[in-house]
Length: 176
Image 1 (cartoon, one colour):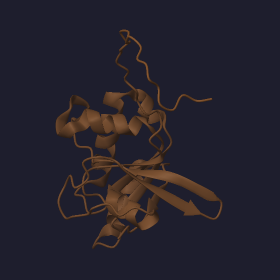
Image 2 (cartoon, rainbow, N blue to C red):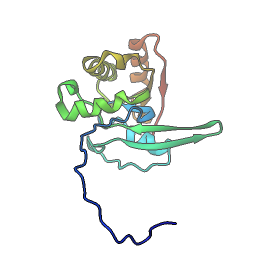
Image 3 (cartoon, rainbow, N blue to C red):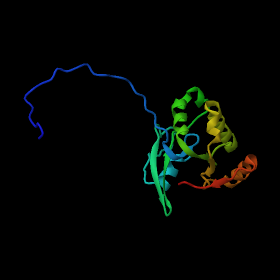
Image 4 (cartoon, rainbow, N blue to C red):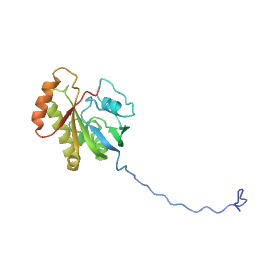
């Protein structure tokens, strides 16, 4: 016995209202980290089911893009994060907003371009920004990838970069 067409009204009482701020704890399993134009979007397009805009100018990615990577044993989510720049921890280039995305990734894939004048300085600058924002970010597992190995003199730059990094393993790739 349901009253499908009620023919009465009740006096409405005052309701309750409150504000709730909800923050996503985990954005992705793997977050792509690095300067603008190091090949993060090209990489995520190559390994996942997403098609992120890529262009030959910095800051084509202004918000995170998520892609699902599937392989024989399972799947994981990878996030193409907007590029960081020096003084991001102070808010330069929307840095605080971008750094907050990094907090919500389990593993960081630090992409360094071999097209850079000084790849080691780029690597250090990004890690310094992580430290200045929150030292806990440096405790996250970080995989270092040397991208753009298809360009001229990339092998020499990679050799110098590996020497400067010491015991840290570097994975050379050409995302394109």
